[in-house]
Image (tube, rainbow, N blue to C red; front, side, top):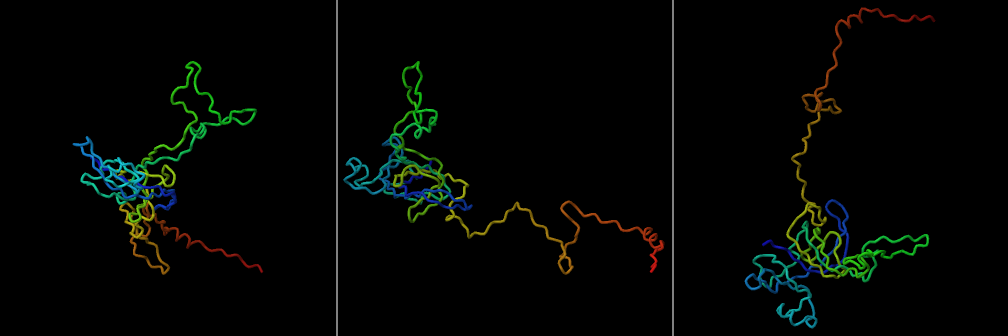
Length: 283
């Protein structure tokens, strides 16, 4: 059985963090509630394997007696079943933010914000009608069916209740984890308003995306790249005129530099035999 990490908590709000590459990212802060395992489902007794966890403190008078019987008499705000995080997990184990680490991809589930009764423009992103030449069709839904059927087909996009639905956002990057404070910073937005109950599930899948700068090891020295080209020593002369030790001064990447041909001895002799004519001074 593949172990699945499970966290239950509360959405605190949104903020901005900087990753190791220096990019500003919108992020959501989640406060993790310690989840206590209150019951284990077994294959022999229940037909499947799972764990029942309770998270968040609640008043006993607000919890029914049937729910209190399942949780052992302790009132929890959330009581839910999830797959086992470990095969050897026992009743009474506490699950916290230490399950996650920066760089993982998780699935976040919550109830989205309720928008009430909305029209087709906001609910289904319909286009509005023209507002000129006497048109009165500004935000009307328009035609809703054919004339032959004489009825409206099921699933037609029309005005109605919007939001307040269970929404799951998949593959959300974990930017940072604070085990002491029980805070988890997730990249991007999370469904629901501030204070909404959020469930995070993950399977340990990691990504190569940069995480928050607080988790970066900035003090570590950069490792040398084995594929980098080695620099050749320079063979230029310094100001004093001395060579820096290079054997071949004229070598370049393309090959050796061609030398200029020396003057021939015959040409030097001809220049020496020619008389020199000087202009006379007539003054």
